[in-house]
Image (tube, rainbow, N blue to C red; front, side):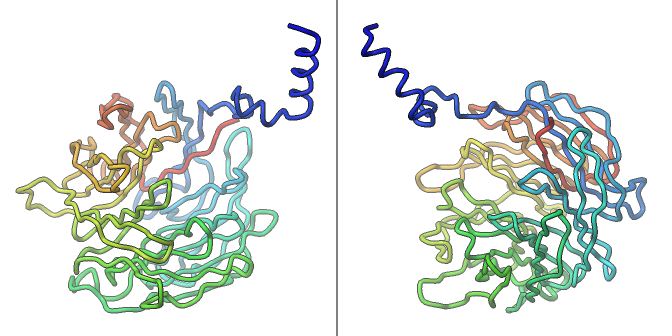
Length: 391
């Protein structure tokens, strides 16, 4: 190497290390191998005392013994703040329902109670954050309303900044669609809208969100350049998943045991592309579809059935967004209300609520298919999992 070359090489390193790092990959943090997994559940009529935790190895699939992380009543949904310092739980207890905040002890993952706020409705069943991590959204199932709470500097929840009731025409299922039933809530990629899947109204409602004030405007309906998702009557929208590029929305219908695919021309304009069943032809038993998740690769979509007790796997067409059935796999237990794909995408953990067990499957990265690993973790009434990178 000539002296001039040496001088240029040193100059590149000193003047533009971020640019150089892009090429050599040095700027990318190493992938986490181990995570703390928090388990939400029902404490009523079970042996549970609150939120539990275990350590999970994304390479081997090893799950450590279960430990109590923090005591609280009926934490049916738990979420870890993007900053990793706090956990929030929906305490689904009917009229006295609350939403609780906990600080996470960095080394052990133990939870310290910070405060709780009234749910301002009946039976909160889903929580999520706005894109800035400054606000927590809550969906109250049995009162059909949604709430926004500010997250204070110390992780506690402040007084609500928004309380909005879902309104509209109910679906045809007189038993399950007697009124509005908010079941899932999430922010748009640009943080200007909030989507709410309402099982009772057969709708995914679209609210305007003010990310500075934490307020919601009434649901957007029939406005210029706005086309809310439309469903077959009796679908019962429960949970929603978006493609990485935000171009496609996938909505799980609990009552119709189906997935409806929408193309999104803009965050508030949707066109229906496909409705695909989640049950095999000829199945006639009771079924309630439950959870939906897209693999980190973006190539596969997974959904769970309660009754048929299975995980259904679909291939995603990257260009059209449409789904093709790959297979369905028994979960090894009863009532898989929730499942979670670990952040590495190597494993799927099926939570069988009525058989008190988390059953592990390895994911084939080429085909998306699932194979039981033999790893099973016994835990009371598992119905939600949330991951946190371990120190």
